[in-house]
Amino acid sequence: MEHEPNPPRSRSGLLIAAVTALVAFALLVANRPDRRRQSIVPGTSSRPTFFVQVIRPRAGLPLGGLLPPGLFGLDARLGFDSTDPSATVDTANPMKLELSAEGWTVRVLADEQGRALAGTEAVFEIVFEDEPRRVRCRPALETVGSLWTVDPGRGGTEISGRFEVELARCEDAVTGEPLGWPPSPLVLHGSFDRLEVTER
Image 1 (cartoon, rainbow, N blue to C red):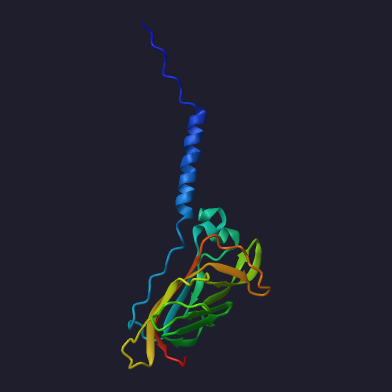
Image 2: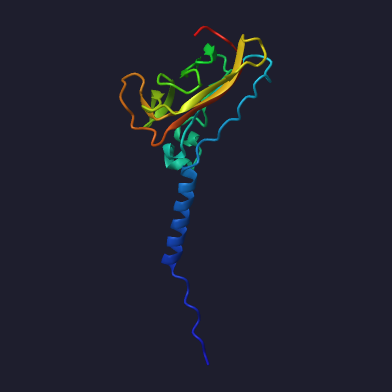
């Protein structure tokens, strides 16, 4: 008795399965933020050291970050550190940290418990809608984040620590026009060691 051969799997079924897998992968990647830099361990640096990083949600990158940002004219990593020749420490104390470099100004304000306050902001340059823009990003009305500091054993003349604050609102730093970006908050993240304490 002859048996009919098994019918070939539907091409449309294979196509649907492939598209479903691709969408699932894209969603998974889109929800992964930029890779976070490791914090500096307090007291381990031989000189004043710091880094600043703006962590972007993948949903805020072209194609959900499936391809390297550099292909779209974007920085692979948004930030700067103390090795940048233009980097400076403008203010450093337990309630206020101001760091800057060429194209960058970062200000983190905190209360006595280290909770980040309104007035915290990051100003930097990005490519937005295919044009270079200088943007100012700030927390939402309810600020989420902290500035944590510790004396690295220098008798109160130096501080070390870290900070992390959500930046939910960005605007054109020149015109003040809201950008409607990012789709979810950026995270202003960084750490520092042996910064000379300055007046409040």
